[in-house]
Amino acid sequence: MQRWRGLEDIPQDWGRSVVTIGSYDGVHRGHQLIIGRAVERARDLGIPSVVVTFDPHPSEVVRPGSHPPLLAPHHRRAELMAELGVDAVLILPFTSEFSKLSPADFVVKVLVDKLHAKAVVEGPNFRFGHRAAGNVQVLAELGETYDYDVEVVDLYVSGEAGGGAPFSSTLTRRLVAEGDVAGAREILGRPHRVEGVVVRGAQRGRELGFPTANVETLPHTAIPADGVYAGWLHAQGEAMPAAISVGTNPQFDGTERTVEAYAIDRVGLDLYGLHVAVDFQAFVRGQAKFESVEALLVAIGDDVKKARTLIEDCERASG
Image 1: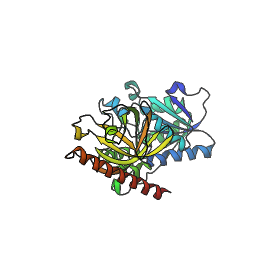
Image 2 (image 1 turned 90 degrees about the vertical axis):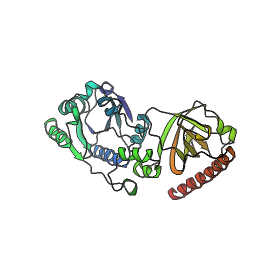
Image 3 (image 1 turned 120 degrees about the vertical axis):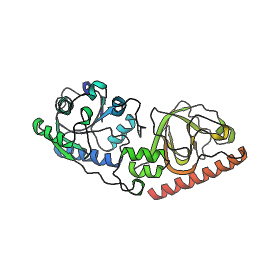
Image 4 (image 1 turned 180 degrees about the horizontal axis):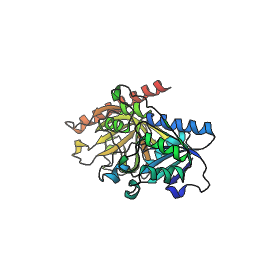
Protein backbone atom coordinates (compact mmCIF):
# COMPACT_ATOMS: atom_id res chain seq x y z
CA MET A 1 0.00 0.00 0.00
CA GLN A 2 1.27 3.46 -0.91
CA ARG A 3 1.34 6.18 1.75
CA TRP A 4 1.46 9.84 0.78
CA ARG A 5 1.75 12.91 2.95
CA GLY A 6 0.48 15.95 1.10
CA LEU A 7 -0.76 16.39 -2.45
CA GLU A 8 2.81 16.75 -3.74
CA ASP A 9 3.53 13.10 -2.84
CA ILE A 10 0.92 11.77 -5.27
CA PRO A 11 2.65 10.34 -8.37
CA GLN A 12 2.43 12.62 -11.41
CA ASP A 13 1.10 9.78 -13.55
CA TRP A 14 -1.65 8.76 -11.09
CA GLY A 15 -4.76 7.74 -13.02
CA ARG A 16 -8.43 7.38 -12.11
CA SER A 17 -9.26 6.08 -8.65
CA VAL A 18 -12.06 5.43 -6.18
CA VAL A 19 -11.77 7.74 -3.18
CA THR A 20 -13.18 7.96 0.32
CA ILE A 21 -12.48 10.90 2.64
CA GLY A 22 -12.65 11.20 6.43
CA SER A 23 -10.76 11.38 9.69
CA TYR A 24 -11.40 7.64 10.11
CA ASP A 25 -10.08 7.68 13.68
CA GLY A 26 -10.17 4.13 14.97
CA VAL A 27 -11.20 2.58 11.63
CA HIS A 28 -14.23 1.19 13.46
CA ARG A 29 -16.83 -1.13 11.96
CA GLY A 30 -18.74 1.76 10.37
CA HIS A 31 -15.54 3.02 8.76
CA GLN A 32 -14.78 -0.53 7.64
CA LEU A 33 -18.09 -0.65 5.78
CA ILE A 34 -17.34 2.57 3.89
CA ILE A 35 -13.70 1.77 3.16
CA GLY A 36 -14.56 -1.83 2.25
CA ARG A 37 -17.16 -0.61 -0.25
CA ALA A 38 -14.62 1.79 -1.79
CA VAL A 39 -12.15 -1.08 -2.19
CA GLU A 40 -14.85 -3.29 -3.72
CA ARG A 41 -15.91 -0.54 -6.12
CA ALA A 42 -12.31 0.08 -7.17
CA ARG A 43 -11.74 -3.60 -7.89
CA ASP A 44 -14.93 -3.74 -9.96
CA LEU A 45 -13.65 -0.81 -12.02
CA GLY A 46 -10.09 -2.12 -12.20
CA ILE A 47 -8.59 1.00 -10.64
CA PRO A 48 -6.93 1.80 -7.28
CA SER A 49 -8.70 2.78 -4.05
CA VAL A 50 -7.52 5.79 -2.03
CA VAL A 51 -8.36 6.89 1.52
CA VAL A 52 -7.91 10.61 2.19
CA THR A 53 -7.48 11.61 5.83
CA PHE A 54 -6.09 14.57 7.78
CA ASP A 55 -3.39 15.53 10.27
CA PRO A 56 -3.90 17.13 12.73
CA HIS A 57 -7.54 16.41 13.42
CA PRO A 58 -9.57 19.22 11.75
CA SER A 59 -11.18 20.26 15.04
CA GLU A 60 -7.76 21.24 16.43
CA VAL A 61 -7.30 23.76 13.61
CA VAL A 62 -10.86 25.05 13.55
CA ARG A 63 -11.18 25.19 17.36
CA PRO A 64 -7.66 25.14 18.89
CA GLY A 65 -7.48 23.12 22.08
CA SER A 66 -10.39 20.86 21.11
CA HIS A 67 -8.33 17.97 19.72
CA PRO A 68 -10.31 14.81 20.56
CA PRO A 69 -8.63 11.80 22.18
CA LEU A 70 -7.37 9.61 19.35
CA LEU A 71 -8.42 5.98 19.02
CA ALA A 72 -5.52 5.19 16.68
CA PRO A 73 -2.42 7.03 15.43
CA HIS A 74 -2.00 7.48 11.68
CA HIS A 75 0.40 4.58 11.22
CA ARG A 76 -2.06 2.23 12.95
CA ARG A 77 -4.95 3.51 10.81
CA ALA A 78 -2.86 2.88 7.71
CA GLU A 79 -2.16 -0.70 8.86
CA LEU A 80 -5.87 -1.33 9.38
CA MET A 81 -6.73 0.20 6.01
CA ALA A 82 -4.11 -1.97 4.31
CA GLU A 83 -5.78 -5.03 5.85
CA LEU A 84 -9.02 -3.90 4.18
CA GLY A 85 -7.29 -3.86 0.79
CA VAL A 86 -6.77 -0.12 0.33
CA ASP A 87 -4.20 0.73 -2.34
CA ALA A 88 -3.11 4.17 -1.09
CA VAL A 89 -3.57 6.46 1.91
CA LEU A 90 -3.21 10.22 1.50
CA ILE A 91 -2.65 12.21 4.71
CA LEU A 92 -3.43 15.86 4.09
CA PRO A 93 -1.82 18.38 6.46
CA PHE A 94 -4.87 20.24 7.78
CA THR A 95 -3.91 23.91 8.07
CA SER A 96 -5.88 27.09 8.64
CA GLU A 97 -5.49 27.88 4.95
CA PHE A 98 -6.69 24.43 3.93
CA SER A 99 -9.70 24.73 6.23
CA LYS A 100 -10.87 27.76 4.25
CA LEU A 101 -11.21 25.90 0.95
CA SER A 102 -14.80 25.98 -0.32
CA PRO A 103 -16.39 22.59 -1.08
CA ALA A 104 -15.90 23.21 -4.81
CA ASP A 105 -12.25 24.19 -4.37
CA PHE A 106 -11.62 21.12 -2.21
CA VAL A 107 -13.12 18.88 -4.88
CA VAL A 108 -11.04 20.43 -7.67
CA LYS A 109 -7.79 20.59 -5.69
CA VAL A 110 -7.93 17.08 -4.23
CA LEU A 111 -10.41 14.85 -6.05
CA VAL A 112 -10.14 16.17 -9.59
CA ASP A 113 -6.64 17.58 -10.19
CA LYS A 114 -4.69 15.07 -8.08
CA LEU A 115 -6.65 11.85 -7.51
CA HIS A 116 -8.72 11.91 -10.72
CA ALA A 117 -11.67 10.41 -8.89
CA LYS A 118 -13.96 8.12 -10.85
CA ALA A 119 -16.14 7.46 -7.80
CA VAL A 120 -16.35 8.72 -4.22
CA VAL A 121 -17.76 6.57 -1.39
CA GLU A 122 -18.91 8.22 1.85
CA GLY A 123 -21.15 7.81 4.86
CA PRO A 124 -24.42 9.77 5.07
CA ASN A 125 -23.06 12.37 7.51
CA PHE A 126 -19.95 13.31 5.54
CA ARG A 127 -19.16 17.05 5.61
CA PHE A 128 -16.33 18.93 3.91
CA GLY A 129 -15.10 22.35 2.89
CA HIS A 130 -15.04 25.68 4.75
CA ARG A 131 -17.30 25.62 7.81
CA ALA A 132 -18.35 22.07 6.77
CA ALA A 133 -20.58 23.62 4.11
CA GLY A 134 -20.40 20.58 1.84
CA ASN A 135 -22.38 17.36 2.31
CA VAL A 136 -22.98 14.27 0.20
CA GLN A 137 -25.59 16.09 -1.89
CA VAL A 138 -23.13 18.88 -2.70
CA LEU A 139 -20.45 16.26 -3.39
CA ALA A 140 -22.77 14.51 -5.85
CA GLU A 141 -23.75 17.75 -7.58
CA LEU A 142 -20.10 18.62 -8.09
CA GLY A 143 -19.55 15.10 -9.40
CA GLU A 144 -21.92 15.82 -12.29
CA THR A 145 -19.61 18.64 -13.32
CA TYR A 146 -16.31 16.87 -12.71
CA ASP A 147 -17.13 13.35 -13.94
CA TYR A 148 -17.29 11.25 -10.81
CA ASP A 149 -20.21 9.57 -9.09
CA VAL A 150 -21.00 9.39 -5.40
CA GLU A 151 -22.12 6.35 -3.43
CA VAL A 152 -23.45 6.71 0.10
CA VAL A 153 -23.05 3.77 2.47
CA ASP A 154 -25.64 3.50 5.23
CA LEU A 155 -23.97 2.58 8.49
CA TYR A 156 -25.17 -0.32 10.58
CA VAL A 157 -26.09 0.36 14.18
CA SER A 158 -24.19 -0.87 17.18
CA GLY A 159 -25.60 -3.17 19.79
CA GLU A 160 -26.16 -2.81 23.51
CA ALA A 161 -23.03 -0.74 24.16
CA GLY A 162 -24.19 2.08 21.94
CA GLY A 163 -27.87 1.84 22.78
CA GLY A 164 -28.69 1.34 19.11
CA ALA A 165 -26.72 4.41 17.97
CA PRO A 166 -24.79 4.38 14.68
CA PHE A 167 -21.16 3.34 14.85
CA SER A 168 -19.11 6.43 15.63
CA SER A 169 -15.69 7.48 16.87
CA THR A 170 -17.35 9.86 19.34
CA LEU A 171 -19.30 7.02 20.95
CA THR A 172 -16.19 4.83 21.03
CA ARG A 173 -14.18 7.56 22.76
CA ARG A 174 -16.91 7.92 25.38
CA LEU A 175 -16.97 4.18 26.08
CA VAL A 176 -13.17 4.09 26.38
CA ALA A 177 -13.23 7.07 28.75
CA GLU A 178 -15.81 5.26 30.89
CA GLY A 179 -13.71 2.10 31.01
CA ASP A 180 -16.22 0.15 28.91
CA VAL A 181 -13.55 -1.45 26.76
CA ALA A 182 -15.90 -4.34 25.89
CA GLY A 183 -18.36 -1.83 24.42
CA ALA A 184 -15.55 -0.09 22.54
CA ARG A 185 -14.40 -3.46 21.21
CA GLU A 186 -17.91 -4.10 19.88
CA ILE A 187 -17.77 -0.91 17.80
CA LEU A 188 -14.14 -1.20 16.74
CA GLY A 189 -14.35 -4.87 15.87
CA ARG A 190 -11.14 -5.44 17.89
CA PRO A 191 -9.74 -4.36 21.28
CA HIS A 192 -8.89 -0.68 21.81
CA ARG A 193 -5.13 -0.20 21.52
CA VAL A 194 -2.75 2.22 23.23
CA GLU A 195 0.82 2.60 21.98
CA GLY A 196 4.05 4.18 23.15
CA VAL A 197 7.61 3.71 24.31
CA VAL A 198 8.41 1.80 27.50
CA VAL A 199 10.07 4.16 30.00
CA ARG A 200 11.45 3.74 33.50
CA GLY A 201 8.97 4.45 36.26
CA ALA A 202 9.24 4.10 40.02
CA GLN A 203 9.84 0.35 39.49
CA ARG A 204 7.52 -0.53 42.38
CA GLY A 205 5.96 -3.31 40.32
CA ARG A 206 9.35 -5.00 40.09
CA GLU A 207 9.84 -4.61 43.84
CA LEU A 208 6.42 -6.15 44.46
CA GLY A 209 7.09 -9.11 42.16
CA PHE A 210 4.92 -7.88 39.29
CA PRO A 211 7.23 -5.96 36.91
CA THR A 212 5.31 -3.79 34.48
CA ALA A 213 6.02 -2.07 31.18
CA ASN A 214 5.37 1.63 31.85
CA VAL A 215 4.09 2.92 28.51
CA GLU A 216 4.64 6.58 27.65
CA THR A 217 1.59 7.00 25.44
CA LEU A 218 1.45 9.02 22.22
CA PRO A 219 -0.02 12.56 22.34
CA HIS A 220 -3.84 12.81 22.42
CA THR A 221 -4.24 9.06 23.01
CA ALA A 222 -7.67 7.90 24.18
CA ILE A 223 -6.83 6.20 27.49
CA PRO A 224 -9.39 4.08 29.37
CA ALA A 225 -10.72 5.12 32.78
CA ASP A 226 -8.55 4.43 35.81
CA GLY A 227 -8.65 0.78 36.77
CA VAL A 228 -7.32 -2.69 36.02
CA TYR A 229 -7.94 -4.47 32.71
CA ALA A 230 -7.22 -7.76 30.99
CA GLY A 231 -5.59 -7.57 27.61
CA TRP A 232 -2.46 -8.03 25.58
CA LEU A 233 1.02 -6.54 25.52
CA HIS A 234 2.49 -6.51 22.01
CA ALA A 235 6.28 -6.27 21.93
CA GLN A 236 9.04 -7.57 19.66
CA GLY A 237 6.53 -9.28 17.40
CA GLU A 238 4.89 -11.18 20.25
CA ALA A 239 1.42 -10.82 21.83
CA MET A 240 1.57 -11.58 25.56
CA PRO A 241 -1.45 -11.93 27.88
CA ALA A 242 -1.36 -9.02 30.31
CA ALA A 243 -2.93 -7.43 33.35
CA ILE A 244 -3.00 -3.68 32.70
CA SER A 245 -3.18 -0.89 35.26
CA VAL A 246 -4.32 2.62 34.35
CA GLY A 247 -4.25 5.41 36.92
CA THR A 248 -2.25 7.49 39.36
CA ASN A 249 -1.17 4.70 41.72
CA PRO A 250 -3.00 6.06 44.78
CA GLN A 251 -1.40 3.42 47.02
CA PHE A 252 1.82 5.44 46.82
CA ASP A 253 0.17 8.87 46.50
CA GLY A 254 0.94 9.18 42.81
CA THR A 255 -0.35 12.11 40.78
CA GLU A 256 0.58 11.26 37.19
CA ARG A 257 -1.65 8.92 35.17
CA THR A 258 0.23 5.97 33.76
CA VAL A 259 -0.49 2.89 31.65
CA GLU A 260 1.40 -0.14 32.94
CA ALA A 261 1.17 -3.66 31.58
CA TYR A 262 2.27 -6.80 33.43
CA ALA A 263 2.99 -9.67 31.05
CA ILE A 264 1.40 -12.63 32.82
CA ASP A 265 3.74 -15.53 33.63
CA ARG A 266 6.68 -13.91 31.82
CA VAL A 267 10.04 -13.53 33.55
CA GLY A 268 13.05 -11.42 32.64
CA LEU A 269 11.47 -9.18 30.02
CA ASP A 270 13.51 -6.09 29.19
CA LEU A 271 11.39 -3.74 27.10
CA TYR A 272 12.88 -0.38 28.06
CA GLY A 273 13.10 1.94 25.06
CA LEU A 274 10.93 -0.24 22.84
CA HIS A 275 7.75 0.88 21.12
CA VAL A 276 4.96 -1.41 22.34
CA ALA A 277 1.19 -1.69 22.04
CA VAL A 278 -1.37 -2.55 24.71
CA ASP A 279 -4.78 -3.99 23.78
CA PHE A 280 -7.62 -3.60 26.30
CA GLN A 281 -9.82 -6.69 26.23
CA ALA A 282 -11.94 -6.51 29.41
CA PHE A 283 -12.44 -4.47 32.59
CA VAL A 284 -11.37 -6.14 35.84
CA ARG A 285 -11.92 -3.52 38.56
CA GLY A 286 -11.69 0.19 39.30
CA GLN A 287 -8.70 1.95 40.80
CA ALA A 288 -8.47 1.59 44.59
CA LYS A 289 -6.23 2.35 47.54
CA PHE A 290 -5.76 -0.52 49.99
CA GLU A 291 -5.14 -0.57 53.73
CA SER A 292 -1.62 -1.90 53.34
CA VAL A 293 0.95 -3.01 50.78
CA GLU A 294 0.17 -6.58 51.79
CA ALA A 295 -3.50 -6.04 50.91
CA LEU A 296 -2.41 -4.51 47.59
CA LEU A 297 -0.33 -7.59 46.81
CA VAL A 298 -3.33 -9.86 47.47
CA ALA A 299 -5.44 -7.68 45.17
CA ILE A 300 -2.81 -7.73 42.42
CA GLY A 301 -2.61 -11.52 42.61
CA ASP A 302 -6.38 -11.67 42.28
CA ASP A 303 -6.29 -9.21 39.38
CA VAL A 304 -3.81 -11.36 37.51
CA LYS A 305 -5.92 -14.49 38.04
CA LYS A 306 -9.04 -12.70 36.78
CA ALA A 307 -7.16 -11.25 33.81
CA ARG A 308 -5.80 -14.68 32.88
CA THR A 309 -9.31 -16.19 33.02
CA LEU A 310 -10.85 -13.37 30.96
CA ILE A 311 -8.16 -13.72 28.30
CA GLU A 312 -8.57 -17.50 28.16
CA ASP A 313 -12.34 -17.08 27.82
CA CYS A 314 -11.81 -14.66 24.98
CA GLU A 315 -9.41 -17.01 23.21
CA ARG A 316 -11.91 -19.87 23.48
CA ALA A 317 -14.71 -17.66 22.17
CA SER A 318 -12.66 -16.54 19.17
CA GLY A 319 -11.09 -19.92 18.53
